[in-house]
Length: 129
Image (cartoon, rainbow, N blue to C red; front, side, top):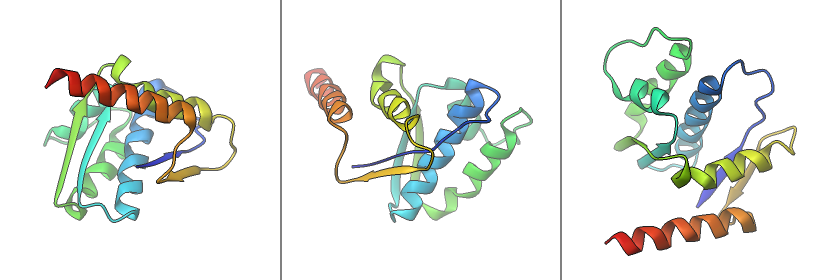
């Protein structure tokens, strides 16, 4: 498992924050050398815009373009919408990240709260099968 948080102090909208988080997730997986990646998020607007072929002309178009430019780095990259409830781990990380003035990374370890939420997510998925 790998996770990171980045300070987002001067962001104008929640959609912009979600688009930046998506880009940062893609960059992190690229830097770690992953070739098959699933990006999950609860911002449907962002997920839809990175999945369409047409050029994006919204206020997050620069971020969407940068995300799409990185597609060729991966053997497979998929984006999937998940409900806000299913994305509690990401929001716990975002809350933790507000405590830091610089990016913070966790590799092969996690905050206790985040680990507990991830385990709850996993157990919920196992019950669906």
